Length: 65
View (cartoon, rainbow, N blue to C red):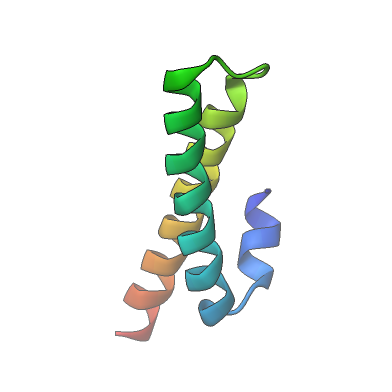
C-alpha cells in the first residue's frame, strides 16, 4: 500500500484497515514461528503498511487540533 492510497481513505476506513492489518500481522508472525513462510518479507511489508496508516491517522489528529 502506497502513502497516496492511504491518504485517499477516510479516517473511519483507516481505523478499520489498521485493525485488520494488525490482526493479519499477528497471525502471520504466529504462523511464521510455527512453520516458515514462503516469503518472510511479507511480514516486513505488513509492518510498514501499519506504520503508514498510523502515521496518517496521527497527522490527521494533529491537523484537527
